[in-house]
Image 1 (cartoon, rainbow, N blue to C red):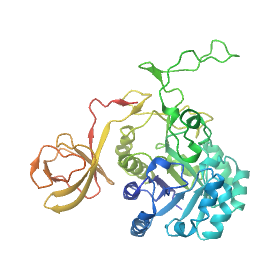
Image 2 (spheres, one colour; image 1 turned 45 degrees about the vertical axis):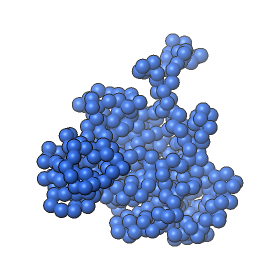
Image 3 (cartoon, one colour; image 1 turned 120 degrees about the vertical axis):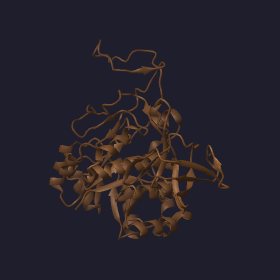
Length: 410
């Protein structure tokens, strides 16, 4: 069985993008009960749209229902069985075991996946979840490749999934109280303020009492440090090791990230999994999309010590973003003329396009047209616009331009 590539879908647009750019499956949350409350998520009015997209693509769809439920929330979900049944979910991703009886009773034909929020890290726990009716376990990010292989050898019938790209928590697989303490927003209720990624000013050196003279390494910029923020995970160069360890699914983090992020990260891993001859070209986009310094996390050790680098530029400790997402190409309406879905101001100079199987298109003859089909020097978000070009565009291609000076975004 081929390994699955699982991508994030924070809304319908991102879901379609994930499928178009190479995901075998996507995970999404309903308006309630998801750990990414601010991702946009999906409401009842989008059920038919999602059903149509799933039928069109034939790909799998998993529902993230992974908050830790309070009593009123548990009572609430028991009133929603009929609504949930309308969604075309293949599986439910949960961390609260109290949901198991409800889901098994009302949705016997759909799989249960254990969320990484449950911090499952050993074969005995996996066996227990198997006996409870789970088909798949999403392992905690603290599991090494050796751990994964030993778990798979011990419980070969269970599917194992792991995050291979994106943000990591400065806590045990999401069990963090920092956001609740500083911002009054609980990460365990889907409202994390990403407090660990804020900038902090230190008034005293960090030195442990029993180790005088040994200091925690701190890097400051403009008088502030991101000491509480972890690096981002990136396993693009280790697909073979991930497959050999026994994983059934490789998961990309990022339901709150942009459409552009979903597109370029999904297709980079798609090409790596498929051993595409141009995989290195798609890999490069991982260093141009918004990210912190990359690491291989805990896969090769008990700490994030291995850095994944782009040798063409120096290491940065802030958020780096080298391209601005401008929108996407719509339907072709005439000879070399296309509708545009505009998300940022567009000018013809420096305009680039990417597609699911096209690393980059640029340097073509480009004419921008306003809503009245008159030539114009720029198009703005919220207004209709078109493009006429000799470039071989297709519907769904993404537009971007390089940011000036490739700044570091804090």
